[in-house]
Amino acid sequence: MNRRAPLLVWLLLSMIWGSTWLFIKIGLADLPPFTFAGLRFAIASLPLLLYLAVRRPPLPREPRDWTMMLGTGLLTFSVNYALVFWGEGQISSGLTAILYTTMPLFGLLLAHWRLPEEPLTLPKLIGVLLGIAGVALIFANQLRSAGPLAFWGGAAVVLAALGTSYANIIIKLHAKHISSVILTTVQMVSGLIPLLILGGITEGNPLRFHWTPLAWVSLLYLALVGSSLAFVLLYWLIKHMPVTRTQLIPIMSTLLAVLLGGIVLGEQLDWHTGVGAVAILIGLWLASRQYRSADLHGPDRRFIG
Image (cartoon, rainbow, N blue to C red):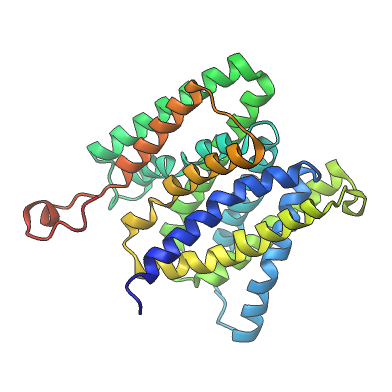
C-alpha cells in the first residue's frame, strides 16, 4: 500500500465533511429540513442495502443487539439530523459546523462516565473547558445580535452533537462484535423512517417541493458522497491510521466549512464567533492529544501530537 494513501484519504474525508455543511445550506433554500434529511439517507442507504444483499453477511441474532442498533439509529440519524437540518436553517453553515465540532468534546465527558479505560485527563479537561467557553461566547453573541431564533438554531445543533456523542459511547460499549456495514445500514434505515414521517406530517408531499437543479445536486451529493462514500472512507481510514489522527478530521473539516461558507455564500463571522470558534478548535486539538508514559519517556515520540 502506498504510504501516502492514508494521508490522502484523510484529506479527502476532511474535504467531504467540510463541504456537507455548504450543501445542506444550499439545499435548505428549496427543501424543508426533515424531509430533506430523510431523503438524503433513503438514497444513501441504497448502496449499503445492495452490498448486504450481495454479500449476505450473518446478521446479529440477539434481541439486545437489535435494540441497540435501532436506539442508536434514532439518536444518530433521526434526532441528530432533524436538529442539525432545522438548526442550520436558522444560522450560517460555518457556525453550524463550528458548533457541531463540540461532539468529540461531549464524547470525552461521557467516556469518562461510561468507559473506565478512557478517563478524563488534565489535557482533555482543559480542552473541554476551552470548548465550553467558546460555545458560551458564541451563544451570548447569537442571543444579543441575531435574535432568539438563531439562538435556538445553535442550541439545536449543540444538542444534536450531544446526542450523537452519547450514541457513539453506546456503540463502543455494545457493538464491537457487529459489522460496521450492518450497524450503519440498520441505523440509517431505522433513522430515516421517523424523519420522513415527521416531514410528511409537518412539510407535506415531497412531490410539491421546489425541486431546483441545486436542490437535486445538494441531495445527491449529501447522500452519495457525504454519506455512502464518506462511511467507506472512514472505515478504511480507521484501519490504516492512528485514532489520534482521525480525531483531528473535525478541525480540518470545520475550517473548510467556514471557508466555503464565506466564499460561496458570503457568510461572515464577527469577532465573538471567531474567538469562540478558535477556543472550540484549540480545545478539540488539546483533547485529541493522547499521552502515554512509553511515548513520553521512550526514544520514539512520533505518536505524540
